[in-house]
Image (cartoon, rainbow, N blue to C red):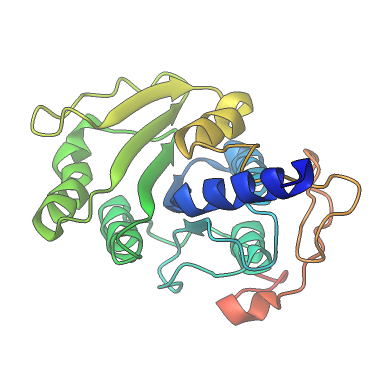
Length: 223
């Protein structure tokens, strides 16, 4: 057997062992953090997938979007055009996201993430309801509460595995990649020839090109 065939066999075995990610992200931040957060998420989407129909999937909560987009183009479009709904309900957002992620295939590594700069201990019970849903339905989601700045998180005694972390928006991309266990040996990227479905977004929030009509999600640039 040649060296090339051995390398191909090892790569196929790694792919077979790889359990893809299904991640749902709730963005609950002020306007000053909104664009940097969206840019960080788009960068993560581009890094954890290598082809138009990547196994890894990221869902950004919106009340009108009730499934995880399949292609990277759809995922990027949903994130790029995300506008916080009026009268944002963090309890509803976490519950909807938990159900959407939870009903993905059983062998997927499931994560529910709240990114917030508006944490309130008064809403403690609202935050917990999504975790009770996860326990009741046996979704086996990992929950991460990521605070931008000092948020004075209070841990949940009933859910000791829940992560609470204060961070800075500049660290957000690396944190999400670490939580989603991005592995370069398995998800190789070809920097010089990105897939046609890949979207590149600058930190300045410049124009984004993708192959999916944003109107599929009910949004356009006018909104």
